[in-house]
Amino acid sequence: MKLINRIQYFLFAIILIGMFASFAQNDYSSYLLNYPFLFIGILFLIEMVLTIREFSSKKSSTLFSFFEYLALALFFCGSFFIIMHLMGADPILLSGVLILLILYSGYGIKALMKFFNKEIGPFLILFSIALVTCLAIIALVFKLQNWTGAGLLIGSSGILSFIILLLILVNIKVQSENGKITLRDCLKQIKTKLVLSYLFFSFWTIYFTLISVGIAPRLYSLANPPALEKMYQDHNPKADIYYKYFQNFLNNRKAITSHSNNSASKKRNDNLEISNKTK
Image 1: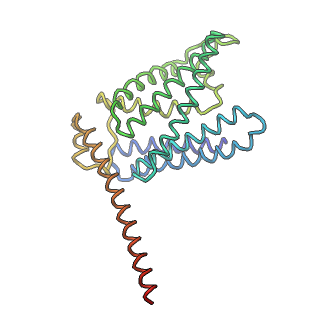
Image 2: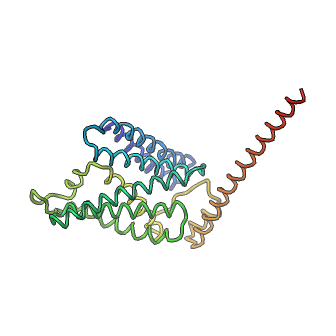
Image 3: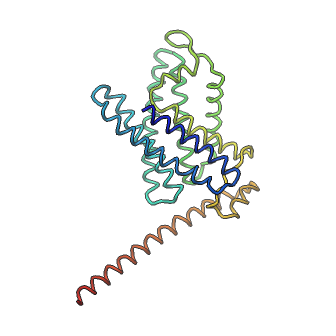
């Protein structure tokens, strides 16, 4: 597991390098940004398979980990499929998102109930992180799907994520059963992937929030028309509308191409069958 975690952290670092390469408008930036999503998803699938061996010892925690790995694998693979405009992207992505929301919302509600019973600070922190992570996941899905309300969700989750991140960096102390402990020590006790999910999803919501206020540069994509990139650079409010229709065009073209290829293949098979019968 530790080896897999290190490889995942390395792939996350590759994504960051890809972002800087994109800012510099390098041709290879898309490879650094896109393909790590697929490899991270595959690694989560491997972790999911490895958890099957632990079902006999700790069934509840192992079951949670099993579905968490599955959901993260579906999310990262689905994101890669959407970026590459591959068929089946939406069902894969939304299945992973649904499972993640069920797991983390349940985790957060359980932590909140413990806080009300014991009034101990770490449980409130866990609830807050789970809540913000769920909001960030929903915001990113709206962003990836170009749904209405994505900007509002990105902005609100970005602000909340930034507040929690500041608390982690300041390393405040919270009251626990054994006295006061720092927030970082509290997070180290979480055995799920919740902290990793929070950091990943919150990073993107904060980044997109900074883009919306003109602080951070936008990712440059050679796959977009030059006119669209120019609209982004000029902070044209109609750029998102242009992007939405451009993505719809690509998806429709892929569906038409796939249908044409299937029709051509069927026609060749029919001609071959007629030729065989005549012989």
